[in-house]
Image 1 (cartoon, rainbow, N blue to C red):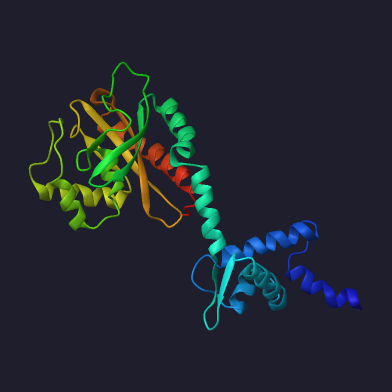
Image 2: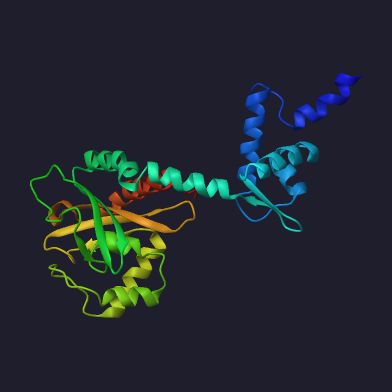
Length: 265
């Protein structure tokens, strides 16, 4: 009789799960995940992770005691300060360049082209890393250089999520050697709207003569753009068809790096 009464709760809490200690750990992690959005009350928390209210309350209270969760009466559970501390430490242990490098190497090997990683620093696109291509063509960029945002594919990718007021600001900053700068601000803004809708950006010989590139943004756990990558090559390797084809690999690589930073689509 006792076995019959106990079975539904065990199944609801996750029968066929790992042994008791591991099971409790996995449940606690599920609770943290469930509290990672808006504040969540106990009833919804228990339902989200498939636990009884008593089990959910016991685990959540333990997480609150250790600062992994915070409880606010009338609102519910949210992530606690301990997770902010651990997130900061994780970022310090794995800087962006180290996280991104294996993905950049793979992309460079797959394409044979030069791959860049960069961030927005003030009004400029700053190159943090560069993997030279295998083709008989040298891209003149160097790690540590700053380039105009409006002229580089990487720079455009960095600001795809910005409003048009900021786009207009960046269009006026800096000069580039490329021969194809838009003299019409509205034409450039129209292309930026198209890039933003597609989630990637091009450099069509705007920054450097005879060089084109495809770029995509990298996002943090919050969804904010924190960096971008680009694939660059000589124009005779980068006709329109190949640039469109490269968008898939470039975006997939940027998204993989973003997931390493905690981003979820």
